[in-house]
Length: 77
Image (cartoon, rainbow, N blue to C red):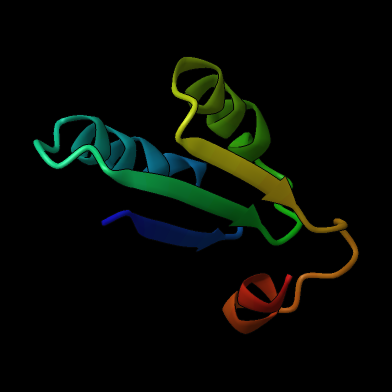
């Protein structure tokens, strides 16, 4: 069984490292981390890309910066 940890984010680079640390410390390894950025203007993209580079289970998508529509829009994206 594989699960998806879905994280919609907007200007939350300062909180993502705590989630990253928690995920890599899990004993259950059958998961993927799907991060959708809703047009952040902070360091979210660079930070998350550094995670993606370290682990094939992590995936990052960025919505256009002018379209900050919220978590539901990220889910639909």
